[in-house]
Length: 153
Length: 265
Image (cartoon, rainbow over all chains, first blue to last red; front, side, top):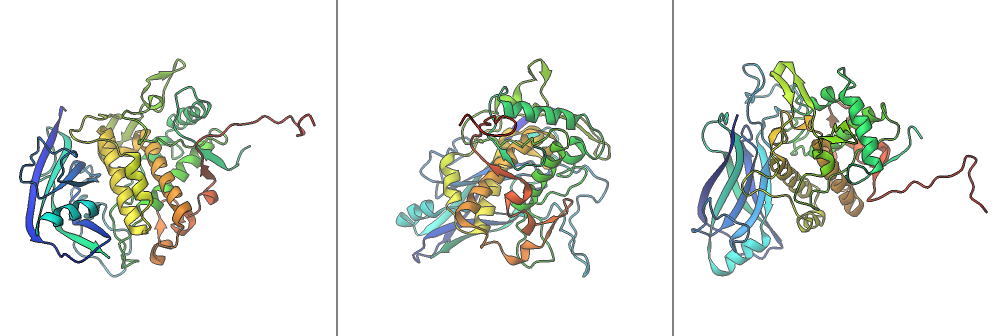
């Protein structure tokens, strides 16, 4: 099957970020769906001009990168890739391989640059993947439940 | 000498002696179709075994079960032992993906010295998944994706927190999988590509370097006794690389000693 690039752009915010002093700041992303083609995501702060075409690490707004090794499609029988929503008391086996993922991006310097000139933060994430004509998923390439900036003093 | 501690060396040009030894072992193991063979062991990671530990949780610990590094260390150990069943004292090589912008020639040459190169790929045979074909790659073809830099790795090695180090190195590792592309970019078939183990050997080396700097004190106690299936080891048992029979070196030169020992003096 022929392969092609997929590049998608997502924007979140704006949100107020606390101005307490900190030594390190992380962008944390929770419960990322990796029943998807593997992807690399570049993160930009407060950059309304960034697009899928110009999302370069050279931009002053670039904050960092994260990547997710995924499972593009199911190779099992029916039900193989359904993640159980409940666990039994005596089942302490490792959880399902498609248990959603966590990622952190250290954004200390990028956040300092933003907060020096703005009070609010807008996060843009540009996701790149390579997939074939049957991508094997519905919806967005980047599918996750939550995100936060954690500042550590 | 069979059973000695081995030094895992950098992936070098195809004619480097340690690469020739490694190719001999890989040729032998790829020809074995039973549970000693490469196809069987590659199948631990994704299809059909699905044992690999990336994002899973465990009800044995309330903590996030960061077993990515320990599980893959045990996996490398298992393959290395299977290779040593075929060729004494062979060691896995590590691919320093910070040092170049291409796959290493030792893993791309179709033939070396007139023989098929077992590092260029392998045949995937997983009947339950309907997979019967050679491995595929698409190195460097994913738009906007590059290999990690030495500066990025140095920054991660400076991270003193175990959880943060593990999270960050796993993300960088994922980036390399995406960059290599093809089967490497899918958990299901990634380990069938021989470059998988050179990549993971680099990741394991980075953990080893981090341990030399920062020790093991930050690893939560809850994780230490969790089993790393199907390898019969726990996290605690893979913390010390020497106990698994290897160390990392940037170079090693064998100096011949006459039988009976001694030099001229």
